[in-house]
Image 1 (cartoon, rainbow, N blue to C red):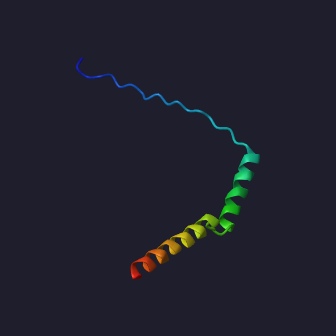
Image 2: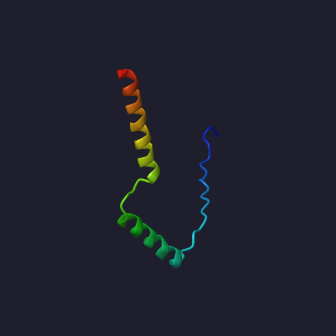
Image 3: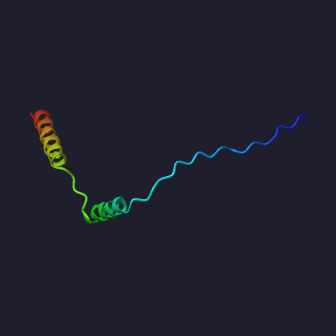
Length: 64
């Protein structure tokens, strides 16, 4: 009377179907990613050059 009747938790499962062509393409993508070296883009080197230029200008302005 005071106890609650246990109810089962509803399990909503959305089935995913296996597609061999997608699996093969994903495997190739993963393999290629791991083989490639991580490269920073050209914008990274440009940022460093600009930052160094600004620092040099600040140092020269304080020395004069």
